Amino acid sequence: MTHKGTVTIETERLILRRFRLDDAQDMFRNWASSENVTRFLTWPPHASVEVSRGYIQYIIDSYADNRYNWMIEHKALHEAIGCIDVISIREDIACCEIGYCLSDRFWGEGYMPEAFQAVIRFLFEEVGMNRIQATHDLNNPKSGRVMEKCGLRYEGTLRQGSRNNQGICDSVMRAILREDYDKQ
Image (cartoon, rainbow, N blue to C red; front, side, top):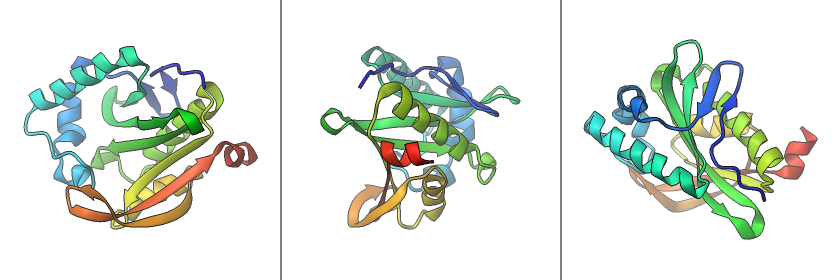
C-alpha cells in the first residue's frame, strides 16, 4: 500500500478535505451536538463548540501520521456537513474500516453515498487497499443502505458484537473487495 494521508477529494457536490479549526462551529451545529445523529455512534453528543474544537485539534495533530479523516464540505453552501474516516487499518491484509456521520439536515439526499464512493475509489486506486469494510447497528438500516449503494456486501451480523450510545447492539458487517470494485 502507498499511504497518502488525507488528500482533498472533490465530487459533484462535495469537497472532502482536512479538518480546520474554523470548522468547529459547523461541526457542533450540524452534527456533533445532535442526539439524532449520534444515536448509533460510539461517542456522545458534544456539549459545546469547545469539545468539537478539541476533537478537531486532535485530528489535525494526527495528520502527521498519514491518517485518513475527511471533513465533508457542501460545495454550494461552503459549510461542513459531516465527516468520513478510516477508523482502522490492517496492513497485513490491506484492509480498512470506514466510519461516517452526516448532519440530519442532509439525510436522504445522496450526500453520504457520494462521499463514501469517492473515498472507496481513492483507497482502492491510490492507496492500494484490498478490502474496505464498515459496520452499522442492526437498528440503523439507513446506514446499511448507504453501504449497499456503495457496493458493500452483507457479510454477517455479530450478535451483541458492539456498543454504541444505545448500549450493546448487534453489529452488521459489510465489505467490498478490490475485485468487486473492479467489476463495477
